[in-house]
Length: 235
Length: 142
Image (cartoon, rainbow over all chains, first blue to last red; front, side, top):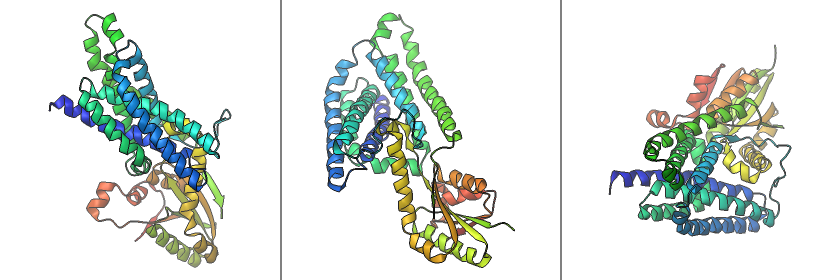
């Protein structure tokens, strides 16, 4: 067990808690408006879909990431979700908001959950694969750990956000770091450059982390300054 | 003299309920007082909101706030003291102190979970944060 392997494992634990928790939260909130029995069915189906997608994507991911430019695209996806993690959703309605106000039907909830599961499972598997590097055992362990986290993750995620707000920042920074690792090992970059790509491997991860935290904090401050998300109920 | 504003943070817990009872007693003695009840919820990340839509998130916040106030509704109706219910999204300590400042509160009365000194320090208790940030007197109820 090398230190590189251990660091990979720790990174995988971190991204799994954040991304699987996030995925679970989408499922729970999308099904929130459904009547009793349908909600149970919706959450169960959404969770199963997320689990199956993780397993299928994990099997394909090593091949997919060997295609030039796809690691760069994956890195961009991870940067995006990392920044969005740090911004609080205030609940203020947008004018262009044509998404389900509250998924009142099982079908609406399923549509939301399927799209979210597909994108978030992809994010989750890409980041686990990036953290695992050449260690296939780590990839398998990482996917295995993510599965129970999707199942129980929504309550865990809410509790973590409530108790330790810094965990979100740490998780976002970790995702930024992993995005940097991923981008630096893209085969296209490797073929294009001669030699200086090795330098990128030391530069891009911290740059990714710093970029995510700086952008996330700026956007979060802007949202807070807008003073939305306040509710009131006269008693 | 203007109405004495008492901010009472509520989270559905037993200590919060005891704080409300203390605040009601205080308001009764003062006569001209109003209770400003506030519930603070942790923010749902926008990475989740991007998928389910901000209105659904808003609905979730509303429900959670109603749940936090549910247990004390009977108590409030019975006491006859003027009161308002609000909720905010964010870090509890900061949000409560901000709310008190914005509403021009004269006092904050809040519950504390009564954790030991060491554990309270480790977990960074909300009450300690409010006491640090508030610009009005803070009363802690055990």
